[in-house]
Amino acid sequence: MTATPQGQSDGFLYDRVSQHLLDLVRNGTLKPGDRAPSLRGLSRLLKVSISTVTQAYQQLQDMGVLRVKPQSGYFIDGSMVAAGASQLPRRVSVSRQPRKVRFGDLFEEIFNLANDPQVVPLGAAVPAVELLPVKGLVRATQRALSRGPEKAVDYCFPPGDADLRHEIARRYMTLGVAVDPKDVIVTSGCSEALALSLQTVTRRGDIVAVESPTYFSVLRLIERMGLLAVEIDSDPDTGMCLDALQTAIDTMEIKAVVAVLNFSNPLGSLMPDANKQRLVAMLEQAGIPLIEDDIYGDLHFGEQRPATARHYQRTGQVLTCSSLSKTVAPGYRIGWVIADRYRDDIIEWKQATSSAMCSLPQAAMAEYLRSGEYERHLVRLRNAYRLQVETMRFMLGRVLPAGTRISNPQGGFVLWVELPRGVDAIELLQRAFSEKISLTPGMLFSATRKFRNFIRINCGHPWDARIEHAVERIGGLVRELLPSG
Image (cartoon, rainbow, N blue to C red):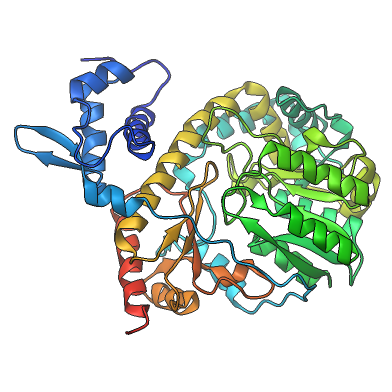
């Protein structure tokens, strides 16, 4: 029997086997009715034990991807593959008029449910704790305390811990982007980075261009700051439509653009490099700052990390916002903004609003990044998210009715689901809540309350019987809400 390769956990190998077969199905190498690779053959190919392949095949059988023919082996289940091959959601045209943003209690309800352990967590985009490097962070925290116990309890004023800023800048260097550590400003998560950026480049009543759909926390910031949002059509594959953005720039006085170019939330879209370059050039010519939210950039499913807008800037008008909340530790609240020409203004806003940040989490995160564990952790995490997204997509395709369309992201861990016309996502939300299942309705991602028959699904938790049952119930609830006739 093949030994487990050194440094790779059984769970990682198990996921790798499942993902390998799903890839073969997804790219058409294996078609409905084809025989799956033999246990022994796949064991030799992937250099894992036969028992690991057997466990992976059992999971795929439970999902409905494989079926067993007695004395013949495993075969690809045609009905499951057809169900999982959903079309992408349609691009919804929006009215390109500046709008005030208004939220009710729904926003708070989504986040309150995220803290309830009794609720199946398909709503808020929160990663599972078991996927995070808890032991590595404990070791890093202990090292930070032993190196400088006084520093760990002292104030840490903006722009933040010097060692952490150095490590963040060094990581950008490995991505081919030159960043001066002095231009890195540590924030309390990516949300504060976005807030500080908006406060710096806009004033009350200004117009901000956003993707449509866009992350609802961005809309909430715009609401609280008294700004106006103009929604720009976005494609499920390539992101913000640049022709539509150019029209908006030509017809109104836009003061900032906020966008997620790498695996947007909720679409999961990835803007091609040529479009990123065009976007940056377009905004530089118009003198409009780009606030880029790159929180999902490290969670790519492909071989190479996609470029940021910062790769293409020439005039310092790109404000790069990110954090480690989706990859390492949401509770550490470590984010940052790289601000270039806006650096001093952002530091003033930071000093005015929160003065100082917790020292120990910053020192611990600097130790963790310095150790090299982050890159190894990312390999495991990306494989886990990829499998979870793929599994969820297959299962949703099986249980939801005809007419459903599901995004096919190449990174991140959320899915954008277009339900059949006439299904009200708010009513679906209320019925799901009553059964202790959370999800996020599409209208939260639009200032104009579009996407009433859309939902976002969090895939940040490993697949288990509890999640499977919740997904099946969502399918049943959607069918109950289908218009009669």
